[in-house]
Each structure stands twice: as C-alpha cells, then as structure tokens.
Image 1 (cartoon, protein in one colour):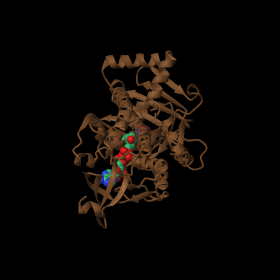
Image 2 (tube, rainbow, N blue to C red):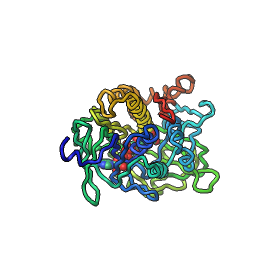
Image 3 (tube, protein in one colour):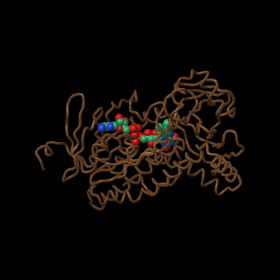
Image 4 (tube, rainbow, N blue to C red):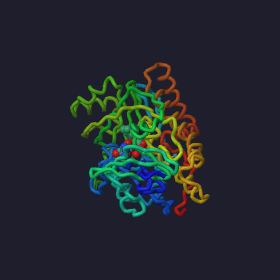
Length: 421
Ligand SMILES: Cc1cc2nc3c(=O)[nH]c(=O)nc-3n(C[C@H](O)[C@H](O)[C@H](O)COP(=O)(O)OP(=O)(O)OC[C@H]3O[C@@H](n4cnc5c(N)ncnc54)[C@H](O)[C@@H]3O)c2cc1C
C-alpha cells in the first residue's frame, strides 16, 4: 500500500453522485448492509430546504408499481405520495388517425397504473432520508475528480471548497449522470444514438380536472405525453398536468420562442381537447434526447448505474424505473457477497450483477427505442402499421396487457430484497 493510500479514509462502498439514483442506491445499501462502511459523495450541496441536484429540477417522473414498492420498503412512500398523483388510465392515440387505445385501472386489477411525482418533491424525500441516516457518511458538496484502481479497491481524489482529500473504497458505485465525467476519465466507451430531438417540458393547467388520466399522443413531429400532477395544497381535484413534448431539433428554437398564448395554442393543436381548454402554462425547459449505453458497466471495484450506465428516451417513462431495478439487483448481489465472505469489489461478484441485469436493460432499451422510432415516424407505412397496431391492441386484450406493462416500465424486479439482511 502506498503512503498516499494509507492516509486515505477507508470504506467498503462509495457511491458517487447524489441524484435520484445515487441517493436511492445509498438508502438501499444502508438498509440491507448496515454493517458496511458507506460514503456518498455529491458535487452539489444537499440541503433539506433547497434541492439543488440536477435530478430534481422542474421535471416529473412516472413511477411504475415496482418503483412504488421499492420506495415503500424504504419507508418513503407515505411522504412521496403527499405530492404524487395516481395514474388511473392511459390513453394512446395518433393525431389525425383513427387508431387509439386506452388502458384503465379496472383492467389492471383495480390498481393504479403508476404514480406521477414531481422530481423536486422526490428530491426532498430522498435527501432528508439520507441525511437522517448516521450509517451513511455524507460528503456534499464534494466532487470526485479522479478514480484510480488499486490492489485493494479504488482511490478517489475529491475536492471541496475547503480543499482536497482522498478516500479508499473496496467498491465504487458511479452514478454521476448521463455525461458521466468519471466514465470518460476511466476510458469507458459508450454506444450513442442521437435522436436529433429535444424534450420540451412544462406544467399545464386545463379547464377539466384530469381524474388521473394520462395521455400519449403521436404526431408527425414526435410523441407528446401528458401526465396527471397532484392537486395544489388543499384543492380537492387537480387540473395540473406535466407535458413532455418531443420536438425535432430543427424546431426547438421556434418552440422555445413562443410566448405563453402561442405555446398554449401549439400544445392544444397537437393534443386536442381531451382535458378541455388549456388555461395556463408554466416555464419551459428542454433536454437533448439520446440513447447512451456504457459498453462496460462493471470493472474490478467499479459499477456504473443510473444515467451513467444507460440514458433512454424519456417519452416511454422507463429510465428511472429501470435504474431502480438495477439498484435493487445490485444490492441483492452485494448482500449475497457479504454473506459468502466475498469482497464487494471482486469482479466475479460484479459480473453476477451485470449478467443478471443485462437482459432487463437491453429489453427495456429495445422497447423504448423502437417505440419512439415507430410512433415518432412520418413514414406512411409506419403510420399505417401503428394505427393497425393501436386497433389490434383494442381488439386483443392479452396483447394490450403486454404492451401497457412495457409502456409503464412494469417489468418485475427479480431482486427479492427483504427488510432485514
Ligand atoms: C424530460 C425527462 C423526463 C423523464 N421522465 C421519466 C419518467 O417519467 N420515468 C422514468 O422512469 N424516468 C424518467 N426520466 C429519466 C430519469 O430522469 C433519469 O433516469 C434520472 O434522472 C437518472 O438520474 P441519475 O441520478 O442517474 O443522474 P443525474 O440526475 O444526472 O445525477 C447525477 C448526480 O451526480 C452528481 N455528480 C456528477 N459528477 C459528480 C462528481 N464527479 N462527484 C460527485 N458528484 C457528481 C451531480 O451533481 C448529480 O446530482 C426522464 C428524463 C428526462 C430527461
């Protein structure tokens, strides 16, 4: 061991990045491996009152039933649902064509099809939970500048406003986002598909209460999703919805330049009047749409998770739900390693995780990617096929169940995480 290593504080597991995924991963590890020495490093300050991480901006996230179950096991659900709206039906249609289908809570055994939660609120819940746990050594704001693999694990060079420090960890779980500077520093290659599209998001208020209705609408310029949002404080019904509107790159400037009235008119024109007239529209934000896959998700002592491992098109609402299934599976593999007396950073342990999650990751990415290509296409034969597809879904109930299970990101997690390790 070098002199530098011996002076560094030592941990069993270091999680780098305290966005939605890194925070949830740290909470799962603290719950299932309370004996492990755990550190979480986040570049932004983690304050209880103001959420500053990128994950927790103005977006909202559609959570699958499996993600809701995971948050319940972390005892976070009652807090999360204070500002979450259940999805009671999803209506899928194609603008200008007759093909349409809907899936309702009744067809789903009476259970909501998912829940929409505002990211900022989810951020408060996760930040507070992490700050309340003494078993997580929280370092924020602290930026990890460099990771060097060593004989016993990895050495992390970190920086804060007060100066630099080093940590040594048997395993480093990297959740530093889609651009992942650490993935680049470690020379991990990526597969990238650029959709040449941007997602424009905004909060909307309609005349009619949404009553839990979500909509996916396909237009020649790309798909548009409208998700139900919870009522403002005290209101009995909610008229608020979240818009995720896919725009071709070439129309982004024009879309963002629209004033409120022009924007309302454009959205209404694309979406129609299923929720009545559009009363108000909030600030607009945009996100470049790509599919990014890390070609290596595990190395000895290293694992990439969340956006750092895979970044998917958001219209199918799968990215975070998939990342949570990864987190649960990784936790289960590490609990098993602990019981067997294996080292967390052992490549055989990490390969077990990779082998168990590859199929789920690949099939979720496949569905998400092809969904966008078929439903976002202006090609006449594809338009005809998707109309036929939507009509067939209406006619064949089993097909409809499979389609909506995939669309809602409801693949079942295999990880059987009990409360106590
Ligand atoms: C418009 C849009 C809508 C979406 N809707 C849905 C949806 O409905 N359902 C769904 O399942 N998914 C959805 N997603 C996907 C979801 O948002 C992502 O899965 C999620 O944000 C991934 O978070 P993350 O924690 O991996 O990454 P990030 O949110 O990027 O977090 C990375 C964190 O790492 C920190 N960091 C970076 N570098 C360092 C460093 N060197 N040292 C320390 N800290 C560092 C950053 O400060 C940041 O806090 C959507 C995505 C978009 C763009």
